[in-house]
Amino acid sequence: MINTKKYLGLAIALSLISVNAFAETWSILVDPLSDTPTEVTADTWVTDTTWTDSWADLNAASPEVMVPTWTVSNYEKVACDKDFFIQNNCSECFAGWNKNIWEKITSLNDTWTNPNTSEQIIYSDEQTFPELINLWWDNTKWISNPEDNTKFWKNSQEIIWSDSKTWSGRQEFVLEWGKTINLYESDLWATYVVDSTDKMQWDAIGLLKFPLSYHNIDATWNEGEKMDHTECVAYYAWAPVVAPTAPAQTEVTKVKTGPESLILILIALITTFFFLRIRKKA
Image 1 (tube, rainbow, N blue to C red):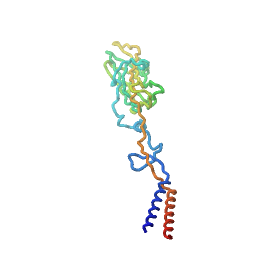
Image 2 (image 1 turned 180 degrees about the horizontal axis):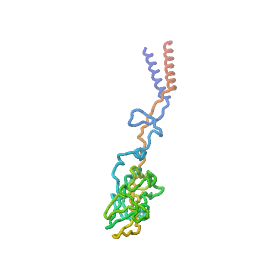
Image 3 (image 1 turned 90 degrees about the vertical axis):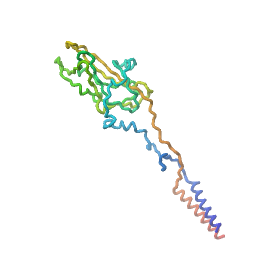
Image 4 (image 1 turned 45 degrees about the horizontal axis):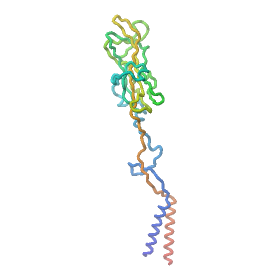
């Protein structure tokens, strides 16, 4: 009886050894936050969607966009001594904030102030809408939504054009002395976004130009020559964005159980039965 138990134990040991000795194994990746192993493929993880979600539909209503418009004069005024200011004929210069990749620039407007002691006049056919200048061409990419500048910008509701009093057929607007009004404003969902750049922090990457053409009017209502004034806002690169990394992965081993393992177990049982038969005959 003792020998029979010994052979039975030997058979069980052989079964376990067979399974562990011949079973194929492979490495899988395990989600460290989960107890259940899951295979990871190229599609299992994607880059951080914090940026892409906000860009997916720029025309969708969003609480972040529903903010008061940002006036150029709110930026810090700086000297127009940089090359990019000089090359773009900037009359008045401002330092915009640093912008990260996929960070929105939206809800913009520009004001017009008449500092004179008499009126100023502008004509609609002499005005051009603001524009964003890419300072680094292929090295930096900006995305404008809408792309059409005439759909991105519009005159504010304070600008009401009227027929010229000189009977020239032109549309004009007269601003009284000492007054300030909103001149341009971006459309409600219009947005500029830095798509990519290889520039370092504090490198100027974009220049937003606000042009204005006007005429001074003297006390006797004589109209002066056209004067051009361009306000420029420089935007700078923020710290380079680090690409998101894959989740932490742990390598484990999983025993493969299939037809091969069942065959090995069956062989072990037959061997045990064979030994038992020999023992009984003996």
